[in-house]
Amino acid sequence: MLTKLTMDILLVENVVAGYQSSNVLQGVSISLSEGEIISVVGRNGVGKTTLVRTIMGLLPVRSGRIEFAGKQITSKAADHRARQGIGYVPQDRGIFPDLTVEENLRMGRFIGTKRNSLDFESVFNNFPFLKERLHQRGGTLSGGQQEMLAIARALINQPKLLLLDEPSDGVQPSIVEEIGQFLLQLKATGEVTVLLVEQNFDLLQTVSDRAYAMEKGMVADQLSVDDLNNDEILAAHIAM
Image 1 (cartoon, rainbow, N blue to C red):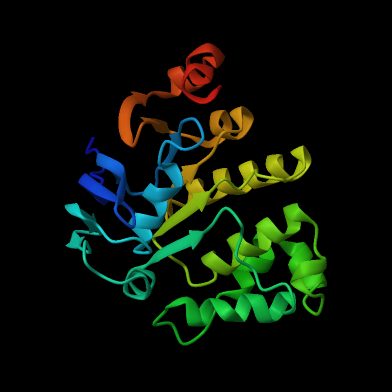
Image 2 (cartoon, rainbow, N blue to C red):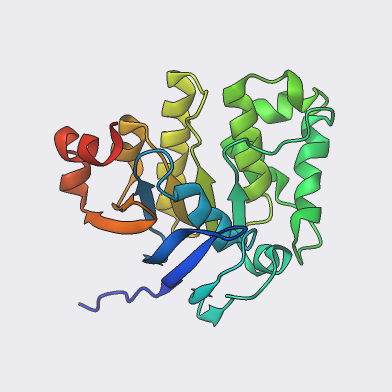
């Protein structure tokens, strides 16, 4: 029986990056294979969000390299990376509060895509409540609903890689559980790889194939599924 080979869809090698004259990432290396959900864990301020923003092209790489789908993107702009198939949901969600749900979803076209049409059908299958609230302003949705809208907007372009920064932040537990189940469904399709920055134990343990633990701008450890399901080990990397 032949084993299906998977390729690294994302490769980050010895990346140094940060803000102004300060380096936050101190030589970070991670890799993601197609179809995985890989988490990045760690205490506040260790560089998790900086890593995601650097992968998206919102911060420049000062040294090191990034490859996506076999192509080097180290110096490419964020819009180029989006067109190549990287979706991004920031911690603050980044929705437009004064625009309707439909207008927010259509803004996905301007985030950077070569597609002529947006995949509304898939979005409504995954998030049926959005279809019912197409004409509701985004800012009037609950925090959890705004998170789902932000995820839907990122996925409407059918990216190959989805970067999710703290999707549980400010979201009620029942919605966090829904997000976890959705990510499992997404993984089952094998069509989208997910890099998840998260501190919620339940969500991490539900969806992660493995994780990278960061400390002081570096990868301090790699955690297996068994490690992630051990509350003591997980707490050692997350708890203050």
